[in-house]
Length: 155
Image (cartoon, rainbow, N blue to C red; front, side, top):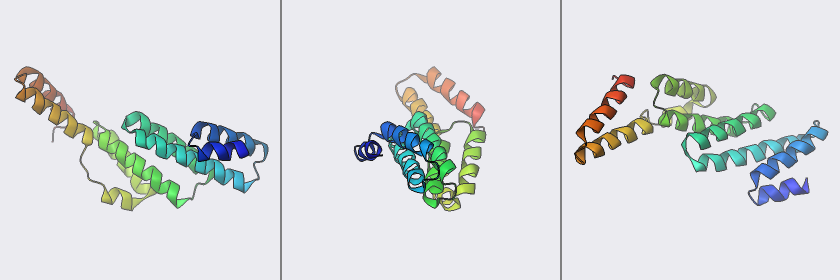
């Protein structure tokens, strides 16, 4: 347990999770270890979320899911997962998938979804890229991008 605590203090989340998991596997009745393992997962999720992008957010989602398997009714974990899902939705180009992510987040923490803007950051970035292409005189490339975006987002 000392190794896990040291690793967590040093932000070595992979080692912390592995060490707490090993200790918890030997003593699954130990509520302190159960909570410590969930916290280690949540800390790693926060670091992954800070990395950003789909990869970081999906990794954060997995870790928060693992933490919630241990502590399914923990409000802070539910809220954190909702935030991650809303952030994923904002990067998602597929409006159906974005809607599913937002609804899943709403079931976990409705206030998080209500406070989040509905726009898609990924869509905004793609529009900005098309605009830059047009400004550079690359009109055909800009139109191609806009046509692909319109096919996915006809509204």
